[in-house]
Amino acid sequence: MAKRKPPGKPLAPTTKGSSLTAAPAALLDDLRVLIRQTREGVAQAVNSALVLLYWQVGHRIRTEILGEKRATYGEQIVPTLSAQLVPDFGDGFGPRNLFRMVRFAEVFPDREVVSTLSGQLGWSHVVELIPLDDPLKREFYAEMCRVERWSVRTLRAKVQGMLFERTALSRKPEELARKELAALREEDRLTPDLVFRDPYLLDFLGLKDTYSEKDLEAAILRDIQQFILELGAGFAFIDRQKRVVIDREDFYIDLLFYHRRLRRLIAIDLKIGKFTAADKGQMELYLRWLERHEMQPGEEPPLGLILCADKSEEQVELLQLDKSGIRVASYLTDLPPRPLLQRKLHDAVVTARARLEAVPALEDPDAPA
Image (cartoon, rainbow, N blue to C red; front, side, top):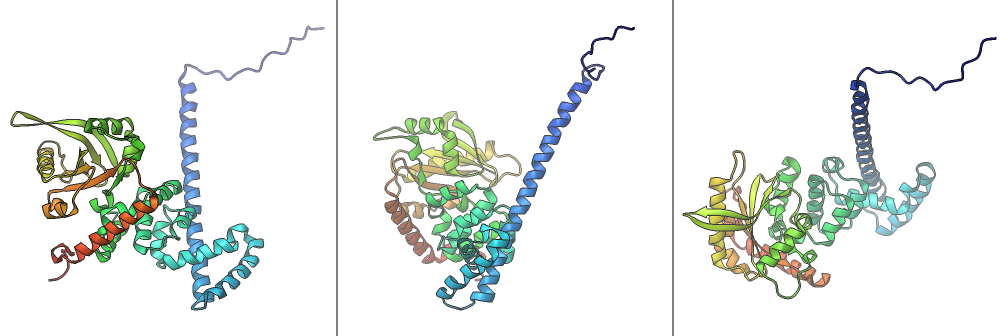
């Protein structure tokens, strides 16, 4: 009887060389990317469809059932509708969410606008937006959220940090501000008034009591990521103490950034004291030098931001800094209580709007004579 051979290990597929070993790994990486991208695309499509669905539900309830009836009627009918929808479609159609859908349709009545926003904003974004009472503020956050692709957490932080009240847009007459937001919505055209803010909240730097401009710069560089988050999306850090040589004399730009959407270099000058008229001349010198020696084809002229501890609004207005491409903003390293900061920003917005509306020269330049 022939002796049986002991069972051996299963034979592994043989390959010649190592090329076949590398190929499956590369294929696996490609497949992973493909699966992730498809899943993200499907999730985004579902999310967009849900936002549109919720708007349609809210619109139908608002126009066909509630109409001009009193709020008390809505308090009765919406729970009744919810009780009939929840068994079939789940808790997403509970009374609280149905009221949100109605509010959604009320504050965003234009379906085309909702369709555009739904490409980037989910229902959780909408829930954060609909409680905002000021239509201009609500539109600002919705469009910035869409363009800069904010997460819900970021949107909430921007609202809490009163970003709208700190932008130059909030200080414009409402008609001009709406035109600027319309350009952002229809053409994705971002303007400096949507980018720059005043004041900048630099409490994260941890600066207390007395400090020098070098201390301020060093603190910013230590926490450059947080500083860029406060500046806003689109800023890229280029250099610190950028050397500028004019007539064999050295000058230094504190911080130099580039803004991708504006396609501009942004020079930042740090001041621990109050803004003075002389600061304008220094920044103008930097900007003209950057325009001549650093600006690349296809870019827009550089802009300057003078960050100072304090400033005189009248002095800034008289210097007409916008014509020179210069912005002046204060910064806060120690935040006051939120109600106090909110009141100060509100007063600043009201004062600035009143001043602009009283000056014909600052009205819309495209308006017919």
